[in-house]
Image 1 (spheres, one colour):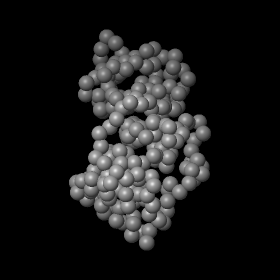
Image 2 (tube, rainbow, N blue to C red):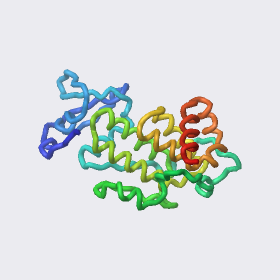
Image 3 (cartoon, rainbow, N blue to C red):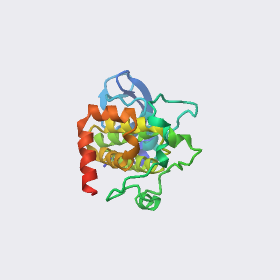
Image 4 (tube, rainbow, N blue to C red):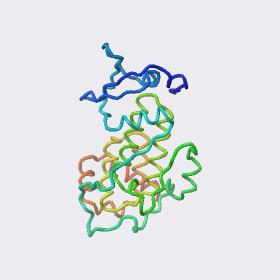
Length: 234
């Protein structure tokens, strides 16, 4: 597990080149050295993070500085999406009676929550929870943290993802975000298991969404895992 010590913040400023385009970031060198990144010989102190995370790397640095991060998205941003049949509102649909419902109550989620991190309130007026980017950022941060040994960031990002899903104002636009999360999870891991459970819970509605049906045709593993979970709940 990576530990960032107070003296890391007093270390000299260093730079990172992140992603295929080498986007530059600056941070205390002690914090940078807590990451698994490659040193680049240069007149400046430069480290390189090869993976394509330049668009979310600011959240990683924010976490390393404070132990938490927040995702901000423009309120006017609208994502293109394929609407579900009849323009249905997924949130009003009946849920399938799964044997184990990981989203049964907020109390269950709060039991596993770390009180030191900020969990968004996802009411009707909170656009941060409605925007698909919010879920995808949490999932990608979880993936980065897993690969770089940032155990606490992994826990924080998974906690935020789980909480946001439980409060998610799911409608036809958001169905595409769930499909994209399944694609990012790529058939394995904790996030994939969580998303399979979530989709199974809302399956009566998801089967009426063209983006979801197309994804099932692309990835037969999802169909198999959904079928298995439903059979286990009989």
